[in-house]
Amino acid sequence: MLKKIVSACLFVVSFSTLQASNTLDSLLNVYTAEIGRSQVYIRRHQARIDSLCALVPMTPERQLAIAREYQHFQSDSALAWYMRLRYVSEPVRTQAFTGLIQLLSASGHYANAFDILKMPESPSLNSVDGYKTIWLLYNEAATTGLLPTYDMQDLQQTAHRYYDSLLVALAHDTVNPVESRLWLTLYQASDKSDWPAALDASRQLLQRVGPNQHQYAILAYGHAMIYEQAGNRNKRREWLVRSAIADVRCGITDNGSSWIVAEDCYDEGDLTRAYIISNYTLTNASFFNAPTRYVQTYALGHTIGNEHDQLLQNRNIALVIALSALAVMLFGLVLSIIFAVRQNRKLSALNAQLSAINSQLHAANHVKEQYICRYLEVYSDYIRRLTTMARRAGEKDPSAFMDREMENFYRSFDDTFLSLYGTFVEDFNALLKPEARLTPKPGERLTIEMRIFALILLGIDSSAKIAQLLCYSPNTISNYRVKIKNNALGNRDDFERQIQIMANGRMLT
Image 1: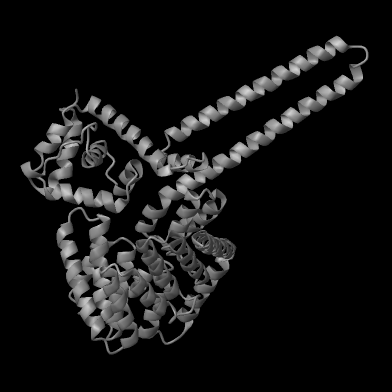
Image 2: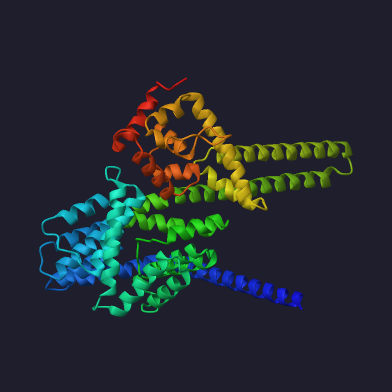
């Protein structure tokens, strides 16, 4: 009886997994097909904007509608239209300032958004949309680490204050009470890590909009992030693709989910689909013209593009070799037929020569493979390639393989770096408060914090690039940098400059 129950459970789990996989594959097929029609949707979006611009008179309400159409389509144009509405009457002025701050925040222009808030004509944003906009601004500015001159702790504290104000405003909202109550439930459930309740509230919000609306794309992205927190990877991927499909159909070029879908496809070994999606994402990022999208998409797109080109090159080389070998074989066959009767000895020599040529081709191909492997070893996305190679090689436990390779990588990095800067550990700790000084673990020569600032010493100061090299997330790297600078013995804003001074040679051994 117990065996039957176990078998039934395994069947249900297997069927559910297969069904989820089929759903995801179907969605990915729809997505790549829609990417092929993306220019049609983009032209429709532009035509909609052009029709609004052609209407007269050009009222503030119409200007606001144009700015909103541009907001997730072309950042420069949206900014220009929002700036025209700084001095109009309410409620358009408040809505324009809210949209302007959202645009600057989404584009990575956090300092400019803070300047807008300080402008004399800036209205008081004491509403649900206002509190949410300012909370997201401070929260993203604190987590991305793109404002080194700002105190990250102050930004985080301000973000918490506005978040608390947002929850109060949602609880007392009378304009959209049903929607506000759902958002309040979602936020409170997420704070408590009550993912079923958060998913239920998010699902109800999704039901209030159509699947081809941009708001649906935003809500679907948030729904995917809740599934990620809940540990359901398949559902996370599914809802990211739904979000990306809605973006394409709306003609949106500020794509928040497409680059993550491309990364997932790359990690799963679906290089062709990853290449199609990353090309689409990079093209849109260039059109939208926002620095944060470049940071998110360029490194991944470059990696996928190079590997895809290498794949095509390898296929072409294999085809040329196959055709050459076939031509040689046909030539040998013709000669064999002609001279078989009278020139057996020459035929033997010819066969030997053919074998030698085949051996040379084999050796040449082997040299090419060694060259490609060597190129991959020194490529900047070394960590991603190791993971992919482990998965494709059939490694039973890719994470264990990854850990071993990372240990070797860190050990090699530590030894090489310390052979150049022998007193780095002592001088690094000398810049920190005594209670915050670091000691490497047994068997290690540097801590992760030391490696981060070792890379900064070498001139690599981008958190995204450091994260790529050390196989951490950009947020983790930013948090480590903030933590260390907060424990600096002197001025925290001067800490990284002090690290750079070490590169002048006084630590060189």
